[in-house]
View 1 (cartoon, rainbow, N blue to C red):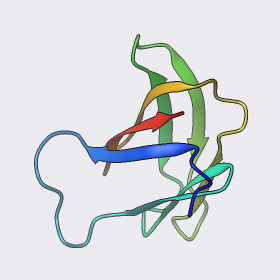
View 2 (cartoon, rainbow, N blue to C red):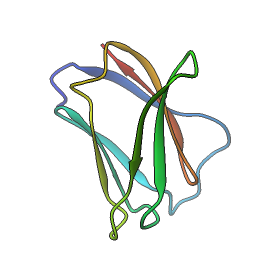
View 3 (cartoon, rainbow, N blue to C red):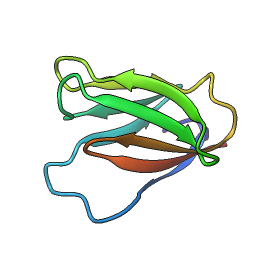
View 4 (cartoon, helix red, strand yellow):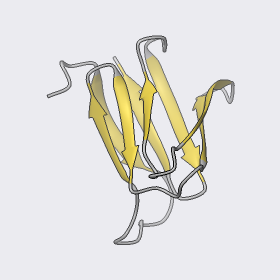
Amino acid sequence: PIAGEYSEITSVGAALPENRPNLRMEQNSIVLSQCEPDMPVDVYSTSGQLAGVYKTDADGHLAIPTNSLPKGVYIIKSRSITCKIVRR
């Protein structure tokens, strides 16, 4: 469980392929795995403001800390995934 901080993860756009990256919520972080190595990942607010710039490691893994994000809706965007999250 995520301790109630996040209520939804939704894909935006077309259906994702079977070998898509894995996105999951953990306490105080959004974890991506099975991504391309060294892939840029950006986090945007719904107003389009850049909230963070990250990069996956050599194994295609990334943990985005969320304790610095205020409550709201965010878009996580990379070459292989675009998702909306709601932080409550």
